[in-house]
Structures are given as C-alpha cells and as structure tokens.
Image 1 (cartoon, rainbow, N blue to C red):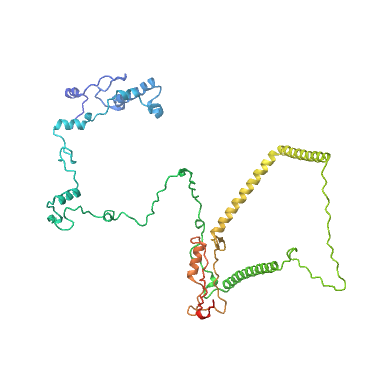
Image 2: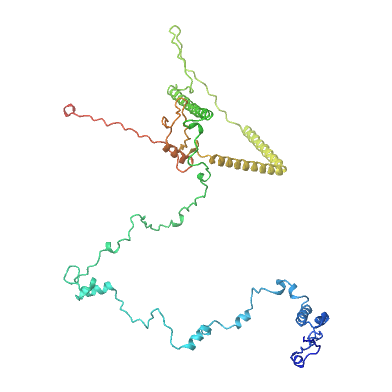
Length: 451
C-alpha cells in the first residue's frame, strides 16, 4: 500500500520550527509558515532580512553624508596628514629599552646575565704593557735564559745575543717601503707668493677626429688591381693613376719654377748698383777725348723761410677751427641720420649674423663630411698625411695565373698609411740617415815646424 500525503504536520515538526523575531526594518514576518506549496508561498516565505539591512544602511549613509560611500572618491574619503600633531607626539612616552617586550620576557625568564663573546675588562686579566722586543732586550741585559725558535734556549755568550743593544739596521726596518719610481716631493719655502700662482686651465673637452672618421682599417681593393681584371676596370684604374701622376708632375714643375725665380732674384740682388732701384741697370758712358766736359759744381740756393705775422697765424687758426667745426657738424648729421635707421640697421645686423652662423655651420658640416673620408691629403701639423698609392700594372705585365704574378705594393706601408689616415698616429716622413764627413788625419813633423 503506497503512502498517502497528508496536509497535517505532526506536533514534533511544529515544535522544531523556530519562529524568527520581527524584522527591524518593518518588513512583515511570514517565515513561520511551514507550507511551501506554490510560487506565491515561496515568494512570501523568502528570508530577505539581510537585503533589507543592507538597503537600510545605504539609506542611513545618504541621510548623514548626502550620498553613498561607494560613489565618493578617495580624496573625499581620506586625508594625507603631512604635518602631524605636536601635542600627540609630546603625549607619547619616550623610547625606553626597558619597555621592549623582548626585554621584559628575558627579565622574567632568568636573572642570569647573557653570555658575551667579546672579552670585557672584568673577564680578561690585565696584561703587562711591555712589548716583546723590550722584553727580549731586558732579558739580554740581565743575561737571563730566553727561548728562541722551536723553544730552544739561546746562548747569551754568542755574538748578537749578549747584553749589547744590537738591533736590526735602519735599512732592514724600512725595507719594502721605498719606491724608486715615485717623484720626490720638494719642500718649497713660503715666500709670500703662494696665492699668486696662475690658476690651472681646464682642458676643453673636444671631439677627436678619429670619432668622426668612418674609413675602414682595410680598404676594399679596386677591381682593376686584380691579376686577371676586367678590361673596363683596368682602363679606369690606369686613367686614375695617370691623373695622379700628372698632378704630381704639375706640382713638381710649379715648385721648380718658384725655385728658379728665387734664384734669379738672389742673383739680381747681388748686382745692385748703389743709388738705383732694384732691377735697373746703368749704361756706361763712352769716353770722348775730343770734347772734354767741363765739370761745374752746381750750387742750389735755398729759399729762406720767412716768419709768419700775427695776422697770418690768426687766419690759419681761424681756418683750422672752421674746418674742425664743419667736420663735427657732418659727423653729428651722420649720427642723427643713423638714429632713424636703427630698426633697419638692427635687422641688417641680425641677417648678417644669421648668414654668418649658417656659413659657419655649413663649413663645419663640410669639414665633418670631409673628415668621414679620412685625413688623406690634408696637412696635420708639420707634415702632410699621405694618400694611398694606386697599385696597377700595365697590360704587358699582367699575368693570367698566380704562378707568374708579380707582387705590387707593401703591406706594412699600407697599414702605416691607413693608421695615419684614421688619425691613430701622427703623420710622419721617413728619416734618412745623414752621413758625416770622415775626419782627415794629418801627420805633423817636428822638423818641418819652424819657430
């Protein structure tokens, strides 16, 4: 027989149901109903008391503050106190080691002081302040037995172990402290001029040319320098070598012409006639015996200088004053004219300054672009940085294989030139040895010397 459902609830189940107290927010208390039949009963008997309490707390916040705390920003809720309250700081108790919790625990646990690893004055007995060297010296004087290395008793009768005050020398004491490479400090006597020395000039921090140069250490060789080059590349390299050689020949001819002109000028300077300008010669007058020329001493009469009268000096002074006044008037007129042109002069000066600045920047940029290609052909200091030698062979000397190849150039000279072009070393020229004249020896005979 199947169990049937009944609508009645037993007394035990009724007693187990606890009746909740009335809601504090005014909601009706219908939780005591035991029936859960239908949606309506479920809606009636749901416990919404936590929801009502949360809503009531939000309403109380709106009544007190004006809005809920969730809608307010951090600046409205919090304040950063950067100053502090002096009264609170004064009311706080001062720091004391006795107030620490660790100190209180240790004092309660044991009254025995803690163990220290470091020695104190009370734990370590007082030692004598006599050094070991003094102690050995006193034992030597008293001729008392004293122990040496390996606890061996030293004999005081041997040399250096008696009562004499024999000690190591000063050289042994100061051994290892002398450095022969250190500069000796010279003591300068004060003469009152200590504060008149020239101040040290700070070295300017300038960029080095090697930071701008972008030339590789080993240049890629031209195609025409190969042992079996293409015809076009070989012709191009030969023409380049021809241009370089022609430029060198023109420079040599120009220097030879300058030397020739200097030599002609020196030769002409040696044949200068007194009283005549440089380069002018005087023809010799042929002697004529038929017509003798009578020589007369020409006397030039000098005009005596007449003394100026008072009226002439006054007139000259008046003319000089009038001339000075006219010059001052012209200068004043010119200055007044320039005042009206001040704006135009200012604009002109600014334009000229801008043009000069642009020209300076352009020169610096051109110099920087030129430095990127290296220092080849430029004079740096006393000498000129050499250019790379063009290594090329004519068509007759070319070899089609490596066995008959004729080497050209010098690797050491290439590396040395490359370092000069990249500003790693200063430009140098080969220094040729100079030959000294041999000393001639002459034999002097005593019988040939006449007194």
